[in-house]
Image (cartoon, rainbow, N blue to C red):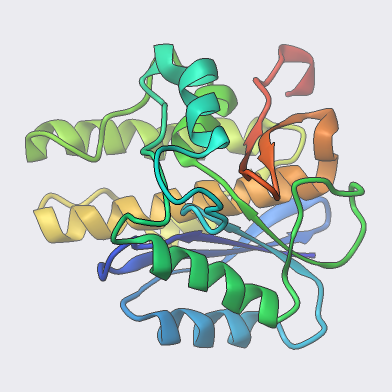
Length: 249
């Protein structure tokens, strides 16, 4: 089974892309990239998942936005469940500038056969897409007291927070019951965290996409047994791993 994570640029900025594959009961990093245009993103997807081939794509962006104004139900629920961790998401509605871009992205995935999957039969091959949100995912996967604030602030502070994320990924995800092999991350794709602003943003996008891809695998492997779904296809939804317990490691 193949798992794609997309940290989608909501406006015109580049998007982080990660491709994981489950091989010998371990998630292997096959590709970690960044693309500028929507056309380039889909060319990348098509190169990794052939037509009719099973795979699940997790997108960090609101691809279902039924409400003309205000906030979606899943947006509100992130604040209810994760607000104390500073992990509530931005509101999404059809009148916001990014809405057409993110909605159309989901529709293009559907046209390729990747259907929305806010419910799933665990480990059943198919072509699925889900919406995810890295911040609450990291809270539960890494048992954090608050989010890692690597997106805003001084460059030096952002870099320190991104180093923490990198270390959590390389130290904790390999120890979970659905383990991620991070040797290629350390040795090839991202051997260290950059020091300049542009390169730091590129690293951030890639690590976020890796979290998205891991959540895709976590959802496909366990379904609702070990995941939380905020909302549904009528309201929009976000899939978040449940908090990791010691007996799951």
